[in-house]
Image 1: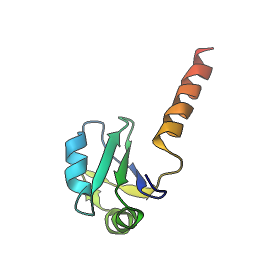
Image 2: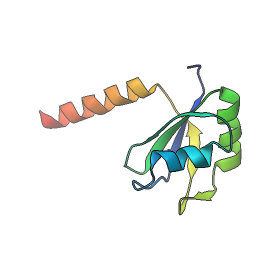
Image 3: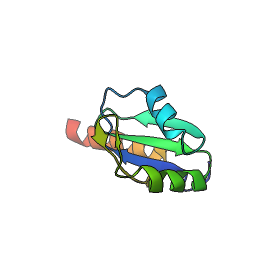
Image 4: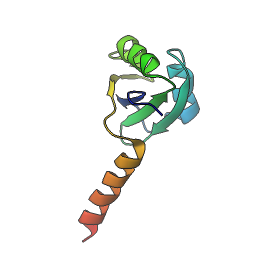
Length: 94
């Protein structure tokens, strides 16, 4: 996956299913992954950086799924995000 294809989307309810996110965001391009964290934000991955940028421009600030979405380019990979989540949980358990 090339750099800049993944979006961080704030304002996603924990009840929004993966297929609903894929349907909504596929209006901007080919969605290759959609992950709802269940904590008010999600990650959407597009097949190209251009599609991700177009989505950011067209959907940021729109009301979707009953929430106003705030969208930005995701920092790091999904693997690094999971690793940092694991570290935070591990530190709390000590």
